[in-house]
Length: 315
Ligand code: NAD
Ligand code: AKB
Image 1 (cartoon, helix red, strand yellow):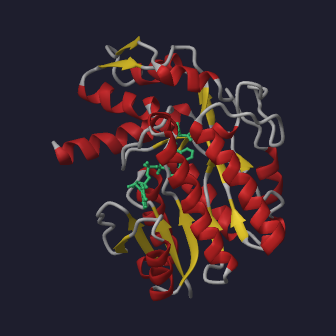
Image 2 (cartoon, helix red, strand yellow; image 1 turned 120 degrees about the vertical axis):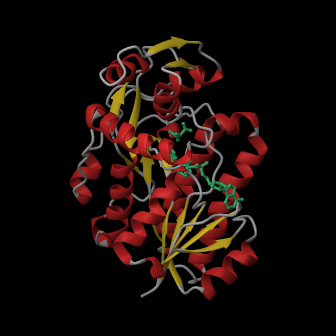
């Protein structure tokens, strides 16, 4: 059996994806890599800068890797601070992997896109799979370009590349790395630690979000459905759950009645205003049977259970 390699394994998604893949296919069939040192228990870890394509090729051959999950990227808020570095990492990293697939060294690629591919001219409610896409952020431009290249490599060279436009992801194991949707994770930490939260978005800012367990399930499901079922080679819309800071704070108050939230919008408000409020995921449901499990209520329950255990361990 060929192995799966996760690149950017120490990040918010990678931490859960590595353990999800190890649970499903065995730790011996997964290789975790990142530019930062990491520890993924029984899963073997290798240091890798995705921009170093020679080492990438060496490690893929050394470990008999068939499938690559490419997660290394700069996210929306960080990318606005470092536009050129974001463009280089987000695009060159993808090309390095696509080119190795073209050369026959890699069999299958997962590359994540984002709701950031949409922009201010996109219909914001129930955003369709195919619609106007004029992203106004560096990150969104890089994700839209990445989607076009994935589809191109599939059409031109037959590369089996699959992708999801993740909504903002909510998890407790690893902290998020510089996105606009990060508030919806930070708020749970601050609720438990301080009983209050200062939000960098306005209270009525609706964004699509998803609990990490659903995102990992979607990713592994998509990567294991029969190839003929995959009709979209740019990236699939997934809806997740749409809520606002006011709504998440009301849910938190069910656990912490004195919890308070204040609003001090910053540059991330402009980014959030350019993204959809809700997403239409009917294509993913039709093509590969996608179904979301968590709603705001069950996600909040899971976040508090996970964080209480995590914070009491690290206190
Ligand atoms: P993250 O920032 O938490 O993790 C990225 C990881 O990549 C980090 O561990 C970092 O050390 C590593 N990395 C950075 N530069 C690298 C390099 N040159 N070589 C190798 N590794 C490097 O990001 P994440 O939230 O886990 O996101 C993973 C992917 O999913 C990204 O492509 C992101 O755009 C996409 N995505 C994430 C979300 C979300 O809400 N988390 C939503 C939509 C899309
Ligand atoms: C971000 O906010 O940048 C990410 C994303 C939605 O792509 N969480």
